Image (cartoon, rainbow, N blue to C red; front, side, top):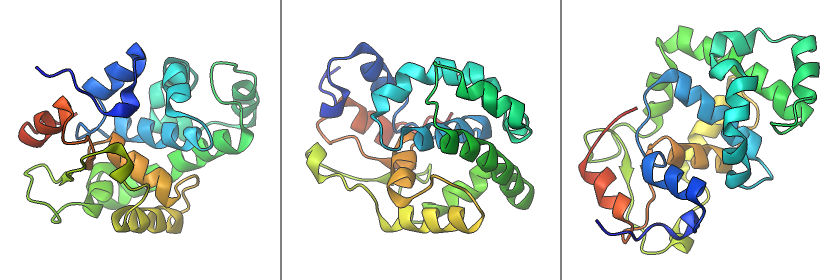
Length: 200
């Protein structure tokens, strides 16, 4: 197997493991979709490696991202989270996580699950069986920071009251949960994901 990776994976073991095992793999599990939604929002203004290093602490602090539990957090819980050095102690981001959990539940009620709603922004626009938009970038600098699909997703989420869901954050989310395959075409994961549609 080629060991050529997307350039952003660098030489950090944590980053490489995330690149090799998760980034771009189609996710259809609501709990994991919620986790990535909160983590991508937490990343705003920060690097993704910073969030990856805090991921275990986030899972512990946010009850493994069980959406109903997060949606019920009160002022005391917010105060506790603000004292947790393992996460990003930004009050707006913490409050938005709780609000987004509440909105997430509303979407689940409306559509049956969040997966059906969020994947609607790429379904039918691709030849791949799993609905992933298969891009073909020769270098990392070719990859956009947002697209028409992420614009539409952002507008729909904002209309439903979600926070920290700008188009750039939404596109990073789409990349993370496999709605788009943005591995560069020289990366060993590009063809693996294009040819093998394993869902999580």
